[in-house]
Length: 162
Length: 201
Image 1: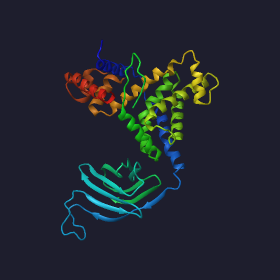
Image 2: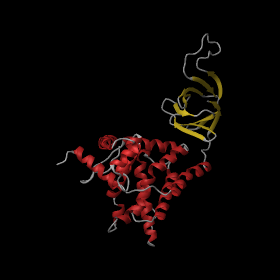
Image 3: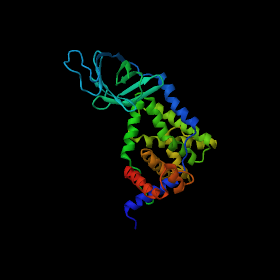
Image 4: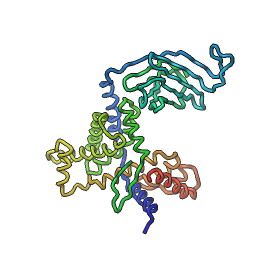
């Protein structure tokens, strides 16, 4: 009798070899994807409060901030954006193929929310984690807008230059 | 955890990681994330299309069922109670809509509710194309495909060429595709299979 591990391997192979499924037609897949785009735009969440955050600190790497005696040794540029109830701390690092951004929201109501960064022809979205953090990797250079959407409000940063 | 029933001839593949990914995508969709929706469609498109096709519907009819399933998903995405079980929800919905399409194509009355449909199906002499065992097998094949899609590019190429094509590629063809000697393919194949097994056991 086969041992369970062998049986597992055999059954997995049998399933793989019996898999005769094919991709759905492109047109049907496009319909399904466009459904969300079309219908979401018709049903925006109501009562969502929108805040525009403004830049209150921009600390470039190896550049002394106002009032500091020596230049920061940090490898990342640090920016702080604030709005009435919240602040967003952004760390921007230059990497081989572009820029990485790590951010943290200071304030409540954004855990499991989404952070979206976009410019003309480019959009990336990630989830806000349990520590209010989010990150984007290898972004191209350019000017971006950042929107963080939570349960009942969203914060927008209009311009981040990378 | 995935709890597909185990039969005498079939192992149970589980993938907590797949369920976590499914749940994350559903939550992002609820927040209006188009990218997450696109990923959800890409992730399940084969499985959902396979169900009506396996039941004998034409490609056109199957495409209609496929679109109805995703339309229903969009309409109900905020009320699905267990986002980690979205796969099972999609399969049940596809089964329901497939059966309605089959009945409709034969000019028969189509029950309006899922409960009524289940009762109708229980009285059928042969519901083999949509039998639970068949659907479980299709779900398991979906999990294998999802696990393979998470492997590195070389393993994806090796396993797809050998196992997931209608005509299996030879070791020589695979060796040429990934740029290694033919004798390397057998051990590489074994290592890649182990990685898939690890993800599913």
